[in-house]
Each structure stands twice: as structure tokens, then as C-alpha cells.
Amino acid sequence: MRRFVLLAALILICTVGWADDQSEIRQALTGGGVPQLTAPSFPRAEYFRSILTRPFRYTIEAPKSLRELAQDGKLNLTVNDVVRLVVQRNTTVWLARLDVQTSAVAVLRSQAPFDPRFTGSFNSTRAIQPASSDLEAGRDRLETQSLTQSARFSYDQSFASGTNYTATFTGGKLSTNNRYSRLNPSITSAFGFSAYQPLLRNRGFFIQKAPIVIARINQQVSRGRFEQTLTDTVQSALNQYWNVVQARENLVVLRNSLALSQKSYERDKRALELGALPPLDIFRSEAEVASRKVSVTTAEFRLQQEEDSLRRLIAADIDPDVRNLPLNLMDPPLPPGTLLSMAREAAIERALRSRPEMVNLHRQQAVNDITVRQAANSVKPDLRLTGSYTSSGLGRTYDPTGLLLPGGLGDALSEVFGFSKPTYGFGLTLNLPIRGRQAQADLAAAQIARRRDQYQERDLQQSVTLEVQNAVSQLEQSKANIAGATAARDLAKKNEEAEQRKYDLGASTIFFVLDAQQRASDAETQLLAARISYRKAVIALQRTTAALLPEYNVVIDDALALK
Image 1 (cartoon, rainbow, N blue to C red):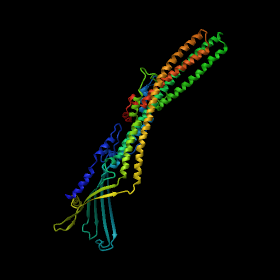
Image 2: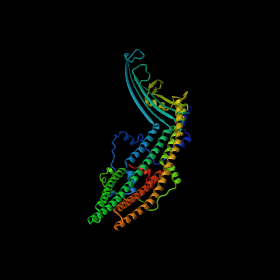
Image 3: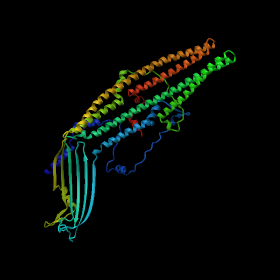
Image 4: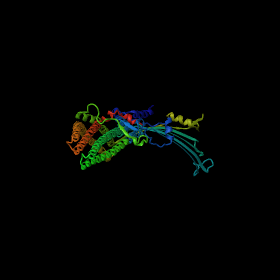
């Protein structure tokens, strides 16, 4: 039994790990929400299908039609519809989604060093050579003929502890016409097992699985980038939604202003025909009508451009069924109920806790911590414990008189797995760099990168804090602007009505009437702009505090799962 002591020790080395490193690996590998890729393994049916299936070309499928949102020749959209369409159809979002899928491939690739490998070979060689002596000659004393056949099979694998083992089986057959060959044919076989275990450098679960941990952290980073891209795209789409609303309502205001100026012109024209208005005063009304027509025309084309921009964000421009339909945006500029308010410190605390940029920075810090430990591992000497065990066999039998006779493959295998002819041993290998400048430089660079992370975190915290402060200030300013613009609009309307009554009574001129109309129109436009600014300020505050996607019930895992 002594011959098995070394083999048992090698197997024990293969299974020993370090509990602290293993728990650290489990903690680093946890993280839901990101799908993991798996590779088919031999000999499952999926394995053969994967290697025999011809590659196929991928095509971009056209998004589903938006015809269910089209009614009465218009494309009816709410804010929630826009968010949903951005998640499902926006091209930028799809590109970010593919980046997450690419990171999953990197995780699968990082596991390749632990894949088992099987190799097999068979060789057959026939040789006919001239004999140079009687010892080499065959029975005809002219030439030597031989047939050599060999086969070799091996299986090797690496473990997370750093242990690597290789199991090898070899077999051979030699047939010759040499008359001095006692065993003809000669059949040999051997089974061997060898393993090595790093004792200093590359020892332990953490170092061996560090590339997998980094790949999975990077996968979480790509998920965070997807969340950031989706948030920015949703914010752009919502802002564009309100740009269209503003352009549409502004066009309504300008058309109403044009109608008032047209009405004043018609009244002045009748007064001129009756001789109650000097001929030169009619040109003021006529010029005002022409000027407001230009403003209406400009607003019409501006509305068309804003609608085209919104169509692109929801990918309606690639749907021929709805591409040219006018948009009917159904949410009003001013939301009903109480206007939003948020405490500045509470907003800053939530942003620092939940912003994907902050979360990704912490993940990057974790990657750099692992890199520091990898660099420190490279500085260590490379000391390895190696061991091997081989059992050999020969195809031979003996007759009753004890004469050696050629045997078969069964005789050789019986001797091999009887372990009666073992060869075993162990050794230590030391690779000690005298200076190790490369490893020392890598360790110093990793430590500098870790310190840089701390300053980057502080810089990002300052940037996020400033963004939140500006967003809160913008929200409060927009609320104040709404109150002021509402009062200005009401006063401008009263002034317009007063000037119109004075003009009807002959106590004022057309100049003051047109000026009052223009002031009322400008006040209405300013109130509309204040309301739209409030809408955008709310969106900006939700984005800076990582509340935009939850506000519209967007779940990142569901968004990533779209096919």
C-alpha cells in the first residue's frame, strides 16, 4: 500500500482550498439581473449540434408596427407610450443592450482555463531497412522489416486551487522479422497520472478565479452603462415630447394672434371704406397681419421638425404605416395637482446611493482591488510541488515450462491496472526572479490606479452633487416662473381687452390695440415656456436622482430580456 501514499497526497492537494478566498469569490460573483452564457459540453447532443451547425447570418428585424396607436389618421401618444417605445424600439438602446450581451460572452471566455481537455492520437509506421549486421538481420539475412503502431490518450484539467493534473494512457505494438526478438509482436501499455500544485505564486481560489470575477464585475458595469444609456435616452425622448407640445401650443397661440390681427385689419378696412379711418393708418394693420403670418409659417415648420425628431427616438420613422401621420400628444403642458417639491439633501443622498455612475465606479474599484492582489501575487517566487505515478504493462505469457511467450493486449492491460510495475516520484521546482522589475512595476501601477479611484470617486461625488443642486434650483425656479408668467398673462389679457374697448369707443388708436395683442400673445408664450420648463426640470431631477426609470415602471432586467 505504500505506493499509493504519494498518489493519495496528490489527490488531497487537488481538493484543498482556502475558505477565505472562496467566500470572497462567492461575494464577488453575486449580482443578479445579468444573464449568464453557458457552453454545451461533450458528449451532449447540444455539443454536436453546435459544432456541426453552419453559421447563419443575422438580420435586423423591423420593429412591430405602431398601428395600434393610430386612430382617426393620427398617432396618439402619451408620455408612458413614449417611454415604452424607447425601451422597445430605440436604436441606441438596442446597441447598449448588445454591449451587455457581449460582456456575457467575455464571462464565458474567462472560464476557458478550467475547461478539461482530451487529446488522442494513433500512428502506424512500416519500415524496411537493409541489415548491417547479423544482429539486425531478419530470417533472410538481407533486410529488417518492422511494423510499429502506437496510440496515446490524455486528459488534463486545472482546478480553482491552482492544481493541474494529467492522466495519460499509452499503448504500442511492434512486429519485426528480427530473429533475436523474444516477443514478436511486442505489445506494451502504460497508464500515468501527474499533477503539480503552486505553493506560493498562483496558489488559491482567488488568484485562479480572478479573471472570472473581473469579467463578471465588468458584466455588471456594462449593465450599469446600459441603465445610464437608457436613462439618458428616455430623458431625451421625454424632453422632445415636451418640445413638440411646446411647438404645437405655440403654434396655437400664434394662430390666435394672427386671427385677432386679421380681425382688426378687416375692421380697419371697413372703417377706411366708410371714411372713418385715414388712408395711411391701414398699412399698420396690414403689415402686422403679414408679420404674424410669417411667424405662423415658421412655427408650422418648427413643429414638423420637432415631430420628426420625436419619431426618430421612438423609431416611428422606419415604420411606413405611421411615418407620415401627425402626432397627437395627449398630456397637457401643466400637470394637474400640486407641483413637485424635493429637499436638496434628500435628493443628493439618493443620487449618491443610486446613480449608475456611482455604482459602476464602486465596481471599478473592486476590479482594481483584484488587480492589486494579482500584481502582488506576481511578485512572489514560483514554487511548485510536482508528483507523478505510472504503471506499465507488457503483453506476455509463460508456458508450463516457464518459457516466455508473446501475449496480447489483455495481458498488457491486466499488468497495467494491477499496478505491479509502478514508477512514482515527486519534486519541487523553484523559479526565483533575482530582480523582478516587471512584477514590481505592475504592482506599483496597480496601487497608483487604486489611489486614483479614490480621487475619481470624490470628483464624481462633487459632480453629482452639483447636478442635483442645479436640478433642484431649476425646479424651484420653474415653479416661480409659472406663478409669475400666469400673473403676467392675466394682466396682459386684461390690458388687451381694455385697449380694444378704448379703441371701439374712439379713445385709442390701432397702434395700441396691436401692441396689446402682441403683448398678450408674448405673455401666453412665456407661460407655455414656463410650464414646459417645469416639465423638463422634473425630468432632469428624476434623472439626476436615478428616479426616472422607476417613475415610469421601467425594470432594467425586463429591458435587457427583450429579443
